[in-house]
Image 1 (cartoon, rainbow, N blue to C red):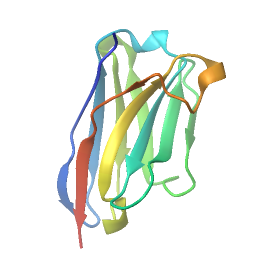
Image 2 (tube, rainbow, N blue to C red; image 1 turned 180 degrees about the vertical axis):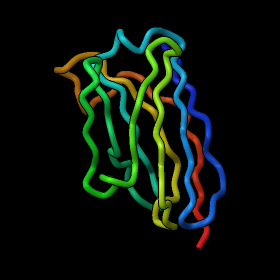
Image 3 (cartoon, one colour; image 1 turned 120 degrees about the vertical axis):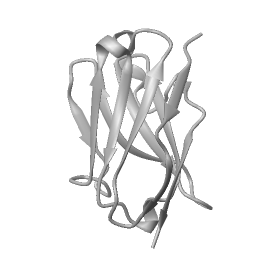
Image 4 (cartoon, rainbow, N blue to C red; image 1 turned 90 degrees about the vertical axis):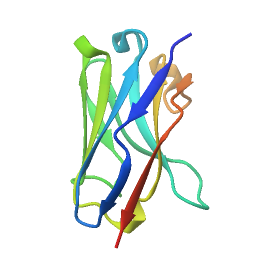
Length: 120
């Protein structure tokens, strides 16, 4: 059973930055894609960004240019660098893993989430 553990969340002022980490218990190279999602208070969970085994990245329009996804395969860790944070970025941030290209968007594994709160 693969475990994903997020860290790096916290309270930050608007305009600040945070870097989230997602550490996997196994090799992240065994997954087709690693992704980050967010669930804001009272809203559905939304896709933010993903990085494939081959290193291709994509972003939701809402965070393009503001967030950057990266991975370190040697450390089995995926990162989400978040800059110029706004109060609307507040939410629980989840890491997820897609096993194959045919299951993109339907992650097989989820982390427990890390809270990010942006104060105005």
